[in-house]
Image 1 (cartoon, rainbow, N blue to C red):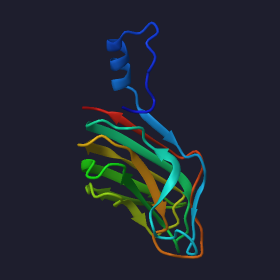
Image 2: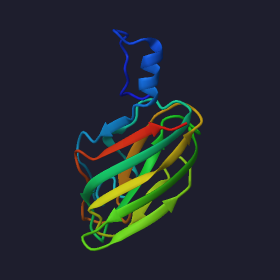
Image 3: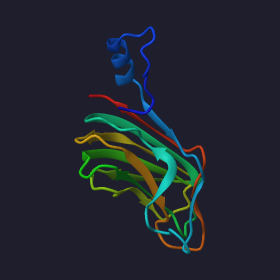
Length: 170
């Protein structure tokens, strides 16, 4: 069940709470700016604080990850999803768009491998949007991870306030 749920009974019946909860998106917001340089995490995917779902039950979810930040053409940006439960996902279908000041890098991904890159580009990315669907087989959480795509002294950052949503569709 997502973390953004109706929990107290009050004036709502259990059936009404279930309908509301089944149709409420799980929303997470980055609670700190994430930064990577060649001297620290660099190219190793590392958790972005705050960008973790509540426990997602088995089912199909549509998702959107919106990462505001900065990466230079020397370091680039890499983004993945870390599964909180082994073999949690059976499939991912996503399109990632990395925006630069004058161009767009687009990437398609279908891998459900834990912590696999959904976006990896060595370009001067200032914004990254990843949208798609995931099939959750075993309940668990998903954590957004980021890194440099190529190790460099330049800083790659995901800014405070970046966000993601997961909404159950089936």
